[in-house]
Image 1 (cartoon, helix red, strand yellow):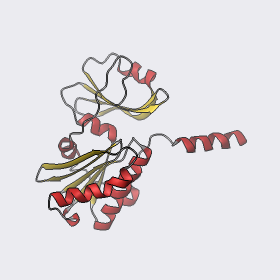
Image 2 (cartoon, helix red, strand yellow):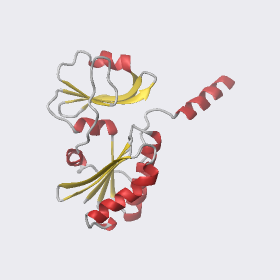
Image 3 (cartoon, helix red, strand yellow):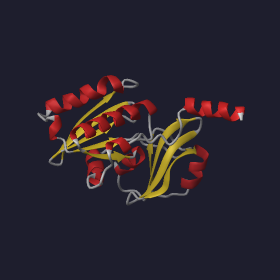
Length: 211
């Protein structure tokens, strides 16, 4: 039995996969994941008559995405996995987006990073990574993908004339893809921000100016 946790966006998405059946709860809780995450997981357990000790594996989206949201999901997953000695599998937000769709030669996953930048990655039809996850300008990304013929852009940002589809995670497909992963030790799991938070960047700029 596997617990799936995604707090990377404005939606709180948790699920339990049992005997290849997905029991899912998804709510919109903008800036309130800390208030709803634990109780939503508990509700999922209670509604399906599942005990916390029944879980054997935890899958968690660890970024990129909302800085605060990622910390909440990763912290819950780490604590739970450490407490019950469970297998812990981190999952890329961008890879999860791509895995949720099929029928294209290329999948381009994007998350708006503001100021004409996005977090992005490119995958082929087998979901192999062709372009490593990175923080990139929209102009630069467009140059890389503008000539792709069969392309699916997934995310919350259009790339010029290429329209994006808002992600709708196919949890079972993501679970199937990752279920044989070795996983990581809980204390090694960290959010994958891809970019420093604004406060850190300002502090570095201030320190650079002093040098």
